[in-house]
Length: 354
Ligand code: DOR
Ligand code: ZN
Image (cartoon, rainbow, N blue to C red; front, side, top):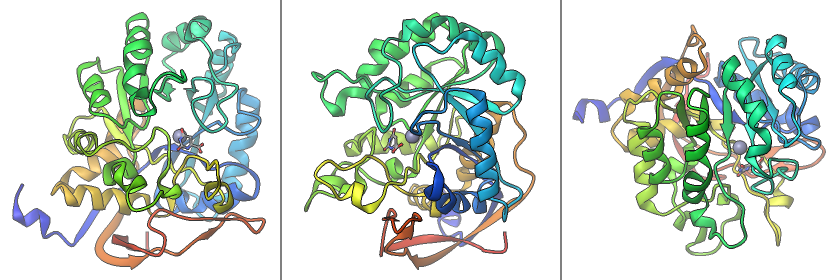
């Protein structure tokens, strides 16, 4: 990589999109949506609310609420998803597509993560629905971890590939699948060697941190997420995939705000809040790999290409500038969320006029 590139102090890129985002609902949603709306053109909104978003009608109401919360940023478009259950009928997929507001369907293995209890217990139960998605071209977004008690938490993604993902892709070779928030070299390899129907999102936190950042020198509940941070070799494999220029890999923050109280608990929730500085954190990761020239492709081009959409038409500017992250952000109702890097420094800053 050229030394010229590592000395870049200012970059302009097409406005990014976040292809995997949790904004919750109610007061929390109103509090967090503007952070994404400010910097992204679009965001794929995860449906794991209580109750989950399982119908197009619910998704419409949720989209309207998000649009009102982001009214100050009229360029922003929330792209809605449905939560797949064992009993979702194929007709729901047709209704979703006809509505024009549903961009994808999310598969949570039951029990895998936050609000996944209503998720899929046996993928075979969904085959008729997946068949319809394949036929109509609606992407399936997959939380790729098995949930069996006897599988070590660090092996759950790899086991999912072997036990579930490979079979799924064989059975539905033309189903568009996004392997969400990949965390292992195994998942990066799997996506690399699969057909062009298979893509992956990678979070900023999995590019920037490994499991030592969660466990060494005291347990850090704000660095706990699912899939859990892995060892350094996996982080390096993810960086390699993200900067490779391969169009199958794109930005998806998995920003997942939980209240401080729910994180700093004897049984803390999984998720990191990164939306307030999403593109800045990715810029840091790409800069550290001397690959700022590959950022735009990952953050702003590959995602729309996979989803069959145009890239955003405007640009944002980032500059190399240190700033201190606030200790907390309001979540409404007297709750706060502790952001990633709370009280610490981020080395890139978005220039604010855009
Ligand atoms: O860390 C996570 N938080 N991973 C997920 O899969 C879900 C998310 C959440 O909704 O809190
Ligand atoms: Zn998520």
